Amino acid sequence: MFLTACGGNPKVSTEDTAQASVGSSSSLAIEKPQLTFGFIKLTDMAPLAIAKELGFFEDEGLYVTIEAQSNWKNVLDRVIDGQLDGSHMLAGQPIAAGAGFGRQAELVTPFSIDLNGNGITVSNEVWSQMKPHVPMDGGKPAHPITADAIKPVVESYKNDGKAFKMGMVFPVSTHNYEIRYWLAAAGIHPGMYTADNIQGQVDADVLLSVTPPPQMPATLEAGTIYGYCVGEPWNQQAVFKGIGVPVTTNYDIWKNNPEKVFVMTKSFVEKYPNTATAVTKALIRAGKWLDTPGNRPKAVGILSQSEYVGADSVVIANSMTGTFEFEKGDKRSMPDFNVFFRYNATYPFYSDGIWFLTQMRRWGQIPESKPDSWYHETIKDIYRPDIWKIAAEALVAEGKLEASDIPETDGYKPATADFIDGKNYDGKDPLGYINSFKIGNKDNVQ
Image (cartoon, rainbow, N blue to C red; front, top):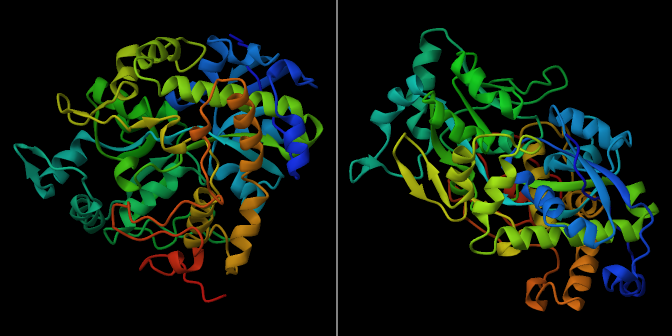
């Protein structure tokens, strides 16, 4: 089924141009009102569905079809080839496309879709082997659960001559970097990428491979993989079906980490600046609506429709309404599992993008050392907070956003140690961060 939605946003380089673009939606001359956007069936596509269903796109004079895509490669190819005007996308995809890994293209991100939203799930058998190594609190597993608990399991498989296999959704996905981070923090090597091994399995203690999100539970149930990192509702689906146990979420791996982004080509943004502004406005409004108390149950009903996520509303509600179920019956309050607006979630911070670049370099997807300056220059071509700001200022002028919703920032978040291993990350010091890890590449270029 096809739906309407919108897409696009402007490349603006001067304050004068920015001011000219700001105004009520009726003052924007929409260059391309008919648009087609893509998404993968995950709950974090919610801003697109909400902007459509609540009429935010139409308020901006936009009429767009939203099409579910089969996998992340298809999403990337169709945006680059112009078959899609924009798409829900993995944060690492536009970054990799501009940084030299995989298919190259000039893509931009003016809108960050959400924070958090992923989990790592293992099979029931693996969980039974992990559980004796998990600290308990009041009769229940103490969270966060580190990969120290899975290390003896991985070693026992290795001693038996069996490869320990886990799934993630795409080589440049947040999920790939999160599961690698989680494993490596416990001294488990997740493998390196080389020119000869594009699967990233060189020296690996755990073999990671790609599985599309909706196929994760079935692949786990078949025994092809023993665990996976994926977004919702596919962790909760494993609990619902009784085939696996989520052991941690990415909130615990990196508190309030960026997850998906909305992406368009640089050429689209430059050719249709007003359309791009209008799209970004509608998406910001959708993010704010999603984080307004009381709205999540309605969002669950919308997302459960077959043309969006199409999973049982009970499964979607497990995470979307502020809870998360680990072992069956062990449901815990997690109000920040899915964040769409709070903590400046929609703003595309340079420091968020640089984190992905550091992980691409750490694991060999970026094969050569780069100076600090390269990280900053590369991300500023891709992450476009200037576009976001134009859209947000227009919404403030229209009374649809508070002035306080616009962060005062140079594009970099303050340094944080909110990681499962306590490492300090400062987006302004990418080389220092890369060099702080025991496992992975080291760089000496300044």
